[in-house]
Length: 82
Image (tube, rainbow, N blue to C red; front, top):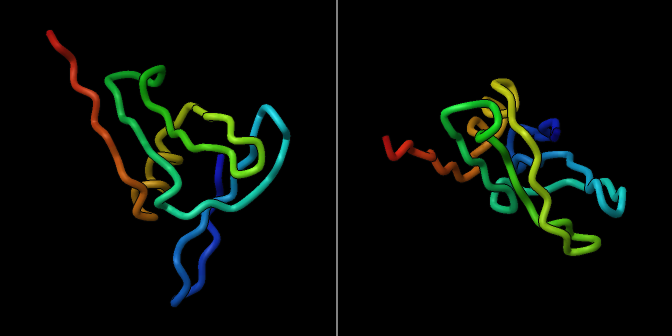
């Protein structure tokens, strides 16, 4: 998962990699989406690879959720229908 790259006046960037084309790049918070579900399996972040255009979805543990939300990534909370 992405690590944050920032300076006091620069926007937050996240390091990421594409599992399909193996490209490594930095993404702004606006290029990522975070979905928080009821379990680890339903909590993930996603983005589109800027190199090959693939839709990428990766699991997000507690630390990744913390980094992404702290960096301004748009978050969707998934709710149970029970």
